[in-house]
Length: 199
Length: 199
Ligand SMILES: [Zn+2]
Ligand SMILES: [Zn+2]
Image (cartoon, rainbow over all chains, first blue to last red; front, side):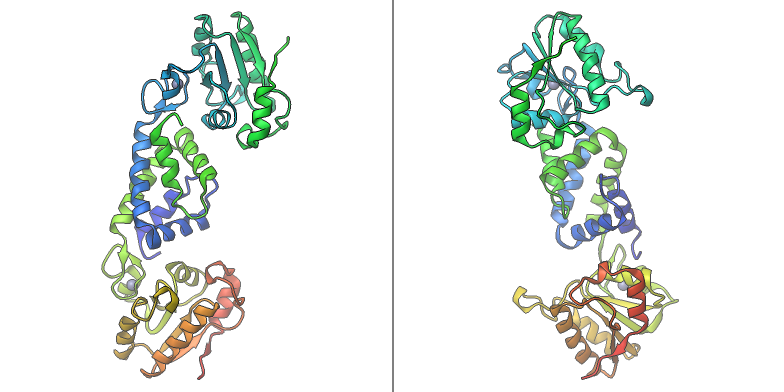
């Protein structure tokens, strides 16, 4: 390689998901040849985002402020709380459905073997919130995978123990898939047809 | 979107080749969730690269210094000069073949309709170099596309007019393809079997 800095750039680009040595090289050359401004802008925004984006204190979604815009909004229905695994899932539901309630983002799912328990998912925070009595329905929108279902079961029990009605998305979400990649129509349908979680 | 900065990051990531809205979102979440350090490092190296990487004054390849490491190296054979379209092509040849000469990077190919003529490709610089008399053979390794072939023809004439022998890569490089994506074996074979360009 004729320039160590270019080599470093190609190496640094490999942190991006799905980017191997060959595409990292292609990206670096593309930026240098045709997108210097875009590259500079990316560097700037990326540095800012890594430094300033943290988690919302109330819902654990990403936020630049202690309370995210959704949690701070006075126009959302505080009786409905939708629990999702990731910010991407929250975004998918927000874009596909007409949901006007609030969210709680687990930032993961129960996975004892990986050391991810209730505490890592902020479930103490969630339990406390359910005890406040404002939430009437807990919509459990975890992924339809084995770990997601186990998490849903746990969440349903957590809700019931606090007099909150747990519901889950209607069947229609394909089993074994990732919520984030479900098409909007299916997701909207499943969300609208959510059913109560029975013991 | 709950955070404008995250929205900006997703938007900025779309300057990368082959990255649309969905993969940009996936990349942003991945960096925020699992690769903060890698993201910070990428931001830093990217800013440096965009600011400091320019073109080598002699071969037009990317370089952080006025003269790139290859051009400055005393151990390369100054009688052999290989002309390529892009830095990626130069890298592919350097990695696949045992070539020990020097390179000249066009950073493009002749394309009159796009306003890319001899001047834009630095061919005045190349002509001047050939006139110095040090180069005995000009290995034309442009891509086997219509524009690449036209460029090769032009380069061969330029060399001949200055008493330099023009050669091209042996057949074996698939027609209509991009040199950068040719497998190493084929490329090495084609490079070793290069033939003289006849009038
Ligand atoms: Zn929030
Ligand atoms: Zn050079």
